[in-house]
Image (cartoon, rainbow, N blue to C red; front, side):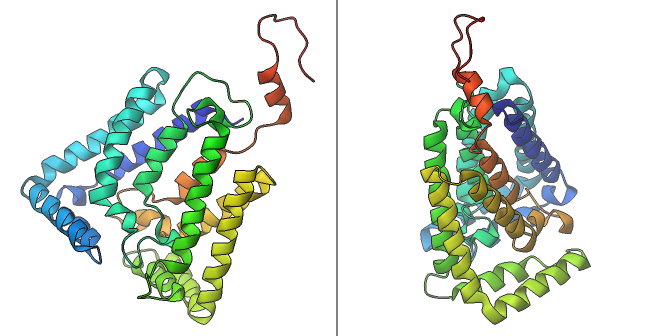
Length: 311
């Protein structure tokens, strides 16, 4: 059964996994700071690139100490989400973390670059999705009536609007992420092949197969994905065929997570998180319609325990 508390715990477990990835020995090296942040500065507008490079220079002399702080912060957030009493404090900490890491560590999710803003790469940046999920799952004490999001500050309508905005943005990025410099096909191929280094052979083979198909009919595939993404957003926003739309969204998110995001690069080593795929699944579950019986139970009069339900 879907509940806000269970999704909070699931989010906490993902934070803990990210903390574990941050504790990898490579993360404590100056090479990680230099390579990771410098890569985020590539193809960025001049102002954004300068901010990222300045941050790199600031962190580089004490890379191990800073990485320890980063890993412990994620660990504290994850543990905090596992206990009901500390959920709010953990989410507040996560919001602060998201603002800094999305801007510097992810380069605004790559939205201003020709390639990294693509849904295949994890639009709009995995770190931002942590913050959006935290907002949807913020505990208010209200019951989950029609969706888990009802128990949060946005409610079903607000979370549905947020969901639609994400998928409309994904559709725009799907067909226009190259900003006129690259075709949608070229963007997709670039994302698929960029993560092949150090990946298992079976995953490299899968990426090469996907890249081959994309080279043949990449632009029509991009347009098809964009239309599906718009449809996913519209159906959830209108509350029509919502369950079917969400299952399609989950399936598409998993496909992008495997082929474009390569499981966040976890199997190759050096990954800092799982990327966007699992977070889209959690967000889908937060707006997934609950059973009619449960909604009726929640709406039943609570003042008199013996009063009949609305069934």
